[in-house]
Length: 419
Picture 1 (spheres, helix red, strand yellow):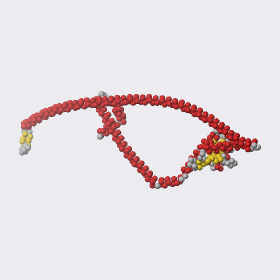
Picture 2 (tube, one colour; picture 1 turned 180 degrees about the vertical axis):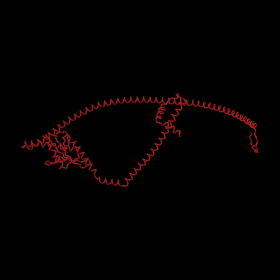
Picture 3 (cartoon, helix red, strand yellow; picture 1 turned 135 degrees about the vertical axis):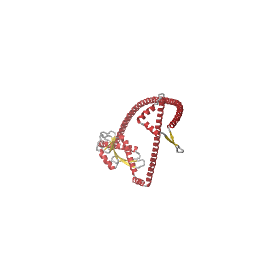
Picture 4 (cartoon, one colour; picture 1 turned 90 degrees about the vertical axis):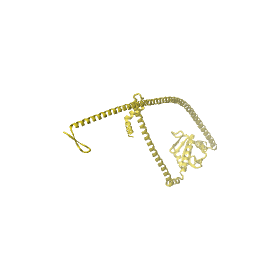
């Protein structure tokens, strides 16, 4: 069997015998084997070159890693020393603060002891002062009793003189004048004394005695203020008897209405049951001789205050009309509009400032979170490289536990990877 080979130039067909085919196959096989050996040798050479290059690269990587490890170790030691120094300073500051607090506590204790001594001294002084005041009050009571006794003696002496004068004038009717004229004389003496007291204490007021035989009390006191305005009237009636009578008060109220007086006061030696100094009974004031000036002063003050209030209400309608015109006019509206605009501007500025501050806070909070995350990551990398030789930082350990519980580091790492 023979094959044909076509010449590529002239397209002439050449028959190929088995011998030629075998020879060609052998030559081709030799050429292929030679080329294969050459390729294998080239591959071996290239592979050795690659291995040498890889070994050199590994050596260089190892040297760089060693240098970087030394540098990281030195940085870690330096940071650890700084942390220890900061911790030491913090402990020293804490010790100083403790000493300062101890000194302050001691000072406070000294102040407390001093205050306690001062309180005790003040208490003793107060007790002494109270004792002195009690002695003074007792002395005042004794003086008041002496004065009352002296006044009583003076009244009795005046009464005696009046009685003697009346007895000399009416010698023929001695018994009758002695029985009936005694009470009349006592009343007249007390009435004159009441007029003198009121005129002396209140020189601006008009003290007008009620004529004898006319119903309407004993004395009318017309009250005037410092400006000379009439503020009201007080009706006074004096009683000097050995027994109190409840019928005096209705009669005095009738006299008050007749005299058109604002207040009625009954000055009596004998007081009603349950009253020792003064009291207001059914709208009528009852007082002893010692409290006459005090009652008069209080009632005058009330009348003057009421009169001033009444004068202050004069012209009130005109003032209200002026106020209404102002509230209904354009001036008040412009005032209110100006106030509202000012508050609106202030609110707008406040809202803008609030938004700006919230934006700054959010940005700084994000930056702090990233800084803490990267710091924790750096410490973790150094721990993985150096091992247990690196000092542990408690704040980062607690932060790692808290962050692992809350899931914040994962979010921060994902965000950093995204960025």
